[in-house]
Length: 255
Image (cartoon, rainbow, N blue to C red):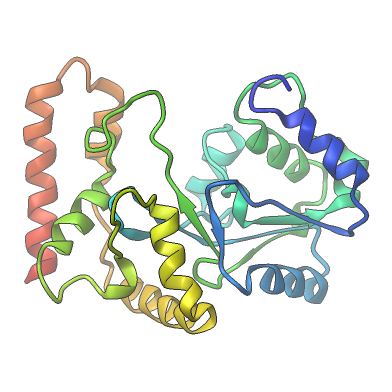
């Protein structure tokens, strides 16, 4: 179908017989209690739309937390400006919501998810949106598209985590895993999870909570913002500047 193929989602959803709709991107992984957590949230609090926190998985075997909360003014502003939103694999909503307020736009090539969520948000049911705070119900794998260099597009959080990965005993084992070619990062991580999915999930959540409290990834994202905007104008000098910021944060964490 046109663009990413939102029209195909409409066909599937309209033919579905379920009361709740949840999405799983083809390259992501749901943790074993993902659907249970979101369904309980919707039923207990009578919500029309719920989403959970996610974790980002890099192509280097590093897992970092991801936080999006519509209760945060900055997040809400970016959301309403169609700049950011909850990740597709973290979302569940009532099928009736689409029947009432419209399905996926079939004319948009990309970004149709945020367009749909904003439309539902503005539908007059603002109190029907809810975040489940359970840390990471979905593992989001970041695709590297269009031949972009993996290192060139790495985020500051991943840079710091990758450096900590080289220091034995600093990065918890729950936040890193080994990728042995020709395995993909999805295959490598699933190998770890599938041995004891419930036990892995529980230990992973404990680690996320502990490391969030230490403010591990509370870094200055200004460098990454500038990096995105003017990288082609200030390529070499900015890499030096960005490297200094990351090195400073790394030293702070190690000490």
